[in-house]
Image 1: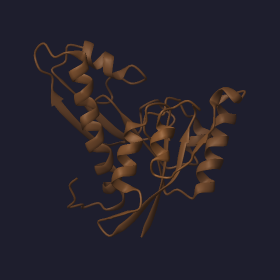
Image 2 (image 1 turned 60 degrees about the horizontal axis):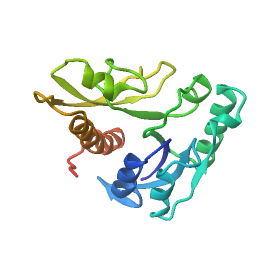
Image 3 (image 1 turned 45 degrees about the vertical axis):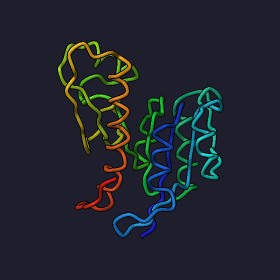
Image 4 (image 1 turned 120 degrees about the horizontal axis):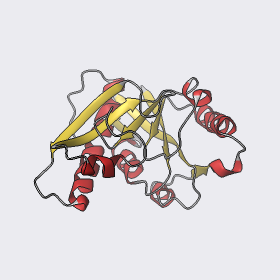
Length: 196
């Protein structure tokens, strides 16, 4: 079965590149995968350069060109439906999406905290500053509630004594690169015997 993926991003695009490396035109567990859409809401996002390395043009839909969220969401839905993607992945896509999007698109989000703790854009910093001894990442379905959809997977690590913020952030990203591919496979192959 061919599984078509759409990836939405706003910035650096390291999780986009991770997905492209692991899935684009690859066969995993009897399924063929292809990234059919890379989309960013920022024309200067570095992820656009990363996509080009795989011969993929990024569709840019800038939120600031729309008069409200619904109009922006409609434009996103149109592009995703045009691509016939089976699954949309929010990989560092820094926009809150409303019902116009969530009722029409099957999407998952990668979030850099152990939800339901530390929702929103400053999750890494809030998690680091919290004094908690564990931290981690979550992949969840996207619904109307910010970072509130059903959890698909979580991974955690022990926060070391006197850990520097830079090392903490690095560990968060390391787990992100592991959990997101696993979660995608899990959705299409419920009993995967696959490791990266």
